[in-house]
Structure formats: C-alpha cells, structure tokens
Amino acid sequence: MKTIILACSAGMSTSLLVTKMQEAAANQDYPATIFAVSVSELILELEKTKADVVLLGPQVGYMEEEFKGNPKLQGIPLAVINMMDYGMMNGKKVLQQAKDLIGELE
Image (cartoon, rainbow, N blue to C red):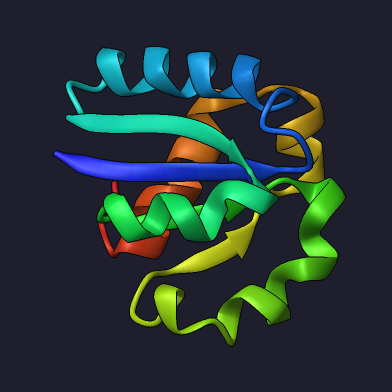
C-alpha cells in the first residue's frame, strides 16, 4: 500500500483530483492511500504519516525548493503536478506521475 499526499494552498482544490486518482488506482488494482492537505499542514501530516511521494499543486509549485530543504521530506520524492494534468483533473496521469517518482513504471 503506497501513500500519496497532494498538497495545495487550502487542501480543497485537489479534492476532485484525489477522487479521480483513487478511481484510476482502483481501475489499475493499485493499492494506494491518496489524500490532500494544505501546504500549511503538510509537515504536521508527515510527522504522523509515512508518505511514499508528495505532489504539490501547481499553485504552490513555487514552494518546491523550500519543501525539498525540509528534513521531514528527506528521502520522500517531491514534485509539482503538471499544470495541464491538474487543470484537466487527469487522475490517471497524475497517478502515473506519482508512480514514476516512487520508481514504479508501467
């Protein structure tokens, strides 16, 4: 079971994308826990949850370097979600991005 965390400005704008990613994971029989948090809650969440990958919403992509420097994210792949995939709510592609970062290729 992989844990994928999406972080955005309020934790709300990614909720539809999370649902689409969960549907894609179910269709692929891919065991994953996928949820969204706000960037302000991300570090607290990582204190209690072992994440396999963290994806940032495009609207907070400017924070990527800041998070990469945080000790709580050491060893956890981190990337910004492709803006087009985010805008189109393409759960399958974003799930694949997460799997690629984890090192699981199709």
